Length: 179
Image (cartoon, rainbow, N blue to C red):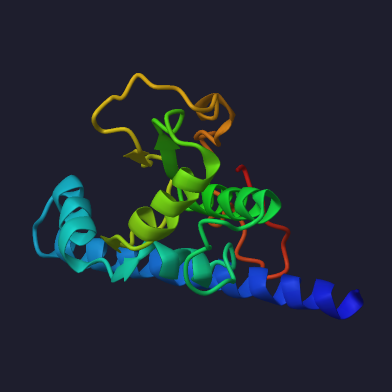
């Protein structure tokens, strides 16, 4: 048990460092743009849309230790596996300020399938979480009125905090996870 705890702690420190490194990279780029005469807002937009690292949402969640399995979950997986993987993905996305809406029309198996095969497969420009920006993914873009679940009201929502980029640079400080 102790070795598992150390391993989890080590993973959290590594994830925290990775997020901070990306945040510092973004800050450096923005400062360079501003030194060359660009206003702050334009510099942020330029970095976020042109210079941020491209990766999949799956890679982001793997880097922060939110998901550890490889591949997609079988459609006939046990309900407990499906529920745990949905929870891991949804909480992991919330840790990087990505929130889901429009999920009530999907049963758990369909929801997990869409998460693993669409949301996690999407290539994105990774922008470290910050208190002024959230990403929302609408899982019901066609606004289906069919309701299979009552899930949306239970999903994580922004709290105003920034999970990995809190006030301290102390590598051993506990994480202030808000999701």
